[in-house]
Length: 306
Ligand SMILES: Cc1cc2nc3c(=O)[nH]c(=O)nc-3n(C[C@H](O)[C@H](O)[C@H](O)COP(=O)(O)OP(=O)(O)OC[C@H]3O[C@@H](n4cnc5c(N)ncnc54)[C@H](O)[C@@H]3O)c2cc1C
Image (cartoon, rainbow, N blue to C red; front, side):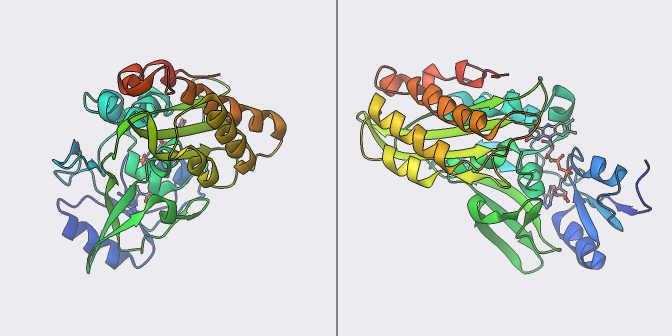
């Protein structure tokens, strides 16, 4: 099917893009990688009157780390940039593990992490990763910039808090308070598919004690699930087998899977538990403070689990 008629603008600055969005008065959409929006338009599930293509705006294709350790991912940084990143494996093992698991190489060459957050698909992998890392989105509109935690950014399936004239300009991950470790595991029917179950785990340790933990789930509910209780159990103690088992049980309990053609709810819950244990086992006392080096992406935690 062909999309409905639409106007197309390709501004060269953020200011100009925001003016076009204002002119669109709620009927305009930002086009980033187009890997979710274009299929929706072709199916006529989305029929924007105006497309504001941000690909000609310079300086948005970065991912970099500030001096204080804050990681910034610009709105035009592609999944493939993160997959090939020299920065992520040592500094952000959860992101390094997830990047090669997003879709297929063609989609990864165009699609963006920020676009994935904006699209707010409950099966989007980056949202869980960013929730586990305590990340946020920086939005720019006519009156300036604001920062929104990813956990508050998504309001429902395919809905976010952006005003119609705001653009998400970057995603931000706060600096570590300890040695980072973690991973992302994804169960999919075939390579390149959306997650049947996805689990993001990000921990920081200092002297063998977990100083911060985040666990979030993809595809096992109508939204990205933050496993707050599971993360709290891990914090302030060593990653013992008992602590890992307890956290895995709480994460499985937080999942809201439905039985469908991909598997029963019970099976998906079991996979959540299994993935949490698998990621944390590789991070635990045996791995100790070596965990970062032990989990380079695409390393063991980046395995597809189909
Ligand atoms: C075959 C296929 C398989 C896929 N498999 C997976 C998968 O396994 N895992 C996964 O996570 N994703 C998957 N995707 C989706 C893919 O990751 C998309 O790249 C991503 O969801 C959207 O990013 P984009 O840059 O392409 O955004 P676009 O398609 O350009 O935009 C998506 C939505 O976000 C809005 N938007 C985008 N950027 C901004 C911005 N900067 N500011 C404000 N609004 C913005 C757009 O207006 C639109 O509503 C798949 C897609 C395809 C086609």
